[in-house]
Image 1 (tube, protein in one colour):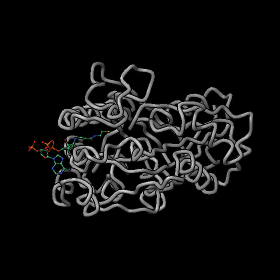
Image 2 (cartoon, helix red, strand yellow):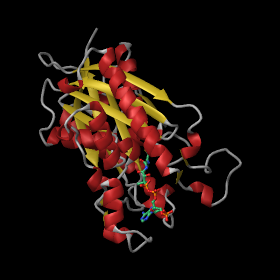
Image 3 (cartoon, rainbow, N blue to C red):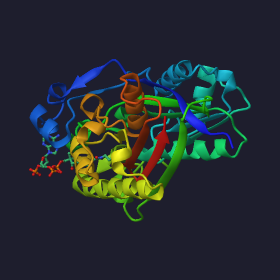
Image 4 (cartoon, rainbow, N blue to C red):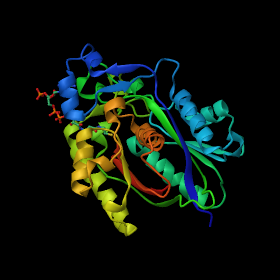
Amino acid sequence: MTAHAIIGSGSFTPTRVVTNEDMSRIVDTSDEWIVTRTGIRERRLASETESTSYMAAAAASAALIDAGVKAEQIDLLIIATFTPDLPMPATACLVQTMIGIPSKAACFDINAACTGFVYALDTAWAMLASGRYQHAVVIGAEKISSLINWNDRTTCVLFGDGAGAVVIGPAPSGSTGRFIGSKLGAIPGTSAVLMVPGGGSSPVQTDAARFITMKGKEVFKLAVRAMDDVARDILAAHGIAADDVACIIPHQANRRIIDAIAQYLEVPIERFFINVDRYGNTSAASIPIALDEARRAGRIKSGDLVLLVAFGAGLTYGATLVRF
Ligand code: COA
């Protein structure tokens, strides 16, 4: 069976930088409060024309160039997002047209909130392993600023916009690159701690229901437990010690959550790639943006074992082990 590997990556973040100082002019908050509680110093916010599809297309184009793969070769396009341009069609179909992916390609969106990219990666990997697809583009893209209540200081300081993408294809001959394994899950009965109550087909359709609501403390505890458990599970399932992992790319929601995971897994924090300070929580885009930055910064080398681990609304969780 052909081994499939991540052969390219790309990302796009809007140019507009909004610092904590800027946030303190919008709501009653401070740089000190945001940094100590979350580690976030600034985030990027998309302009009106920078839609989720626009950012996704930009990230995918960069990933295709990096991989040396042409859009015509792609036969699978998956976008993880909970902020699609439209309820339908899927954002993947909009991006397909924007970057010239041919009609033979399967194109669809996945919504697992902040775990979305890990879910999408596992889906793409399984479809490629079936032998019926050859090259996939997997994107995480979010315009979360469109679902933020800018009067709610408990949520608005946490999030940002952006997109990241990878190209997955047959591993080049001689390379060790391949997927090792993946574990996905969701915790029943936890939907109410993090949600957008309206905007779908539910009868809840007030203006306020269009925005993200969150019980921060509960999410924090569930997130640490879920990420620690799933990271341990996947390492144990493949007989790999945490110490053998060269780089851990966690969902970038909160620096304190990442510190707690590092402590529980007993992995030095330097082994984690962290950029939450610059982008805040970009949900499904957070892992692919971080992965792209880590590769371009030389933090991931050929042969390295990399662990991606995430949690998000649902609550969903997941982890993927990849060798580069
Ligand atoms: N600026 C200043 N004060 C703020 C504030 C802000 N932006 N947001 C909340 N506060 C206030 C609260 O109103 C509260 O005041 P009170 O005690 O007078 O009621 C106080 O700060 C403490 O709030 P608390 O909720 O106890 O803070 P916390 O230590 O739990 O930190 C979060 C809040 C949101 C940073 C933290 O709970 C968290 O990160 N949770 C996980 C969120 C997450 O990752 N979500 C995405 C999942 S994918």
